[in-house]
Length: 158
Image 1: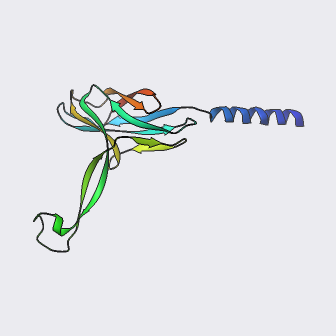
Image 2: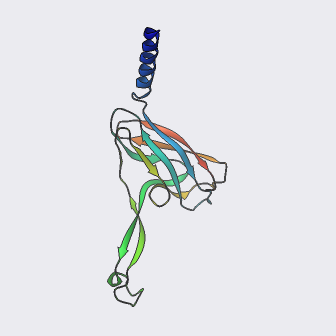
């Protein structure tokens, strides 16, 4: 009895260890909002590195837009002296949002990077077609390791 219990524990441990080895990089929950052709839009997703090595996302491609770029939305504090007369009151500060292009997104082993509204996102610049709820678009993710993933991105109201 004790021997069979040890054997079962050993098998379970081996199965769990096999699940944790080099499962690769995955992109999950990819989505974008509906938009009209000619407009800009953004795509969001979660990027997970289940491989045994670090990697970096270098670019994303797609025929749905004239250009596809990785950006991060950042908040900047603007002092009264930088507002160019927008506010006459001295000492007043405002915040401005700025989209900063990202050349690469580092992805450590075991790390999940979330692309979400107000943070990292993928800009779809000058859409070549209308995007309606229920539609799907293809985006190709290119990594430093040479890996390319084709990701189906769902268009949905969110």
